[in-house]
Length: 281
Image (cartoon, rainbow, N blue to C red):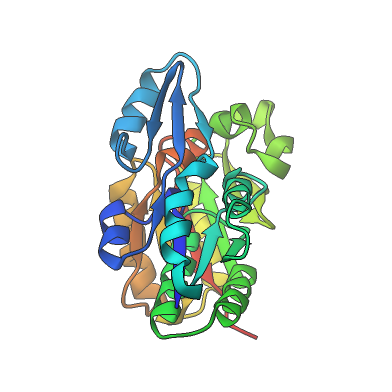
């Protein structure tokens, strides 16, 4: 039997993970000397309120390896397998923590996979992997399919400001946009495990129009695209975007996710992002 383990950077709501039986690990949010788990102690709404009021940018920390120990111990009994699907190791220490914890269980079948993505695309991968595990697929097959999905994912997002990405050190190749361009609305992508620039527009409206064009250009026109929208305090905009995508792309369902605090600390309020998967080759 294979158990899929995930964490809050996937944006899957905690109640949904619990209902599905997916073991779920939190990220740690740090405001000054105070630390919070982002699964039970601080949700996105509370975090954004604190973020707007904070004089200094809060920090994030990967889950300590000890949080994985009870999960590994429970789900690898009797020769069973655990597959841990983590966010990109380029932007999070979660992969490293999961590996360190696995080293404490020699002889157990624990596989830690860097999905090279984060957010709702990771949610789609986790939910598919969980379904495959329930169908009885073996770990090797699940991991092969996960890696295939990771290579086919596309993520575009628009932030109100690059300030949070820049201060949080998660700006990746988009650092070239910092400076005089801080006032424009950049369109970014999450590619090869990190943030990269696409282009910039002068207004949020133009940036969103261009984001839609990018999605329409290569997103499959069917539910297999697993198109999702994620946002930070921009629910109305996300809902409108979802309805438009459903109409224009012939997709019956577009899931909308609230971005978790561990991502919002870098993306900031007002961020809108779209994830989908291109056709399998």
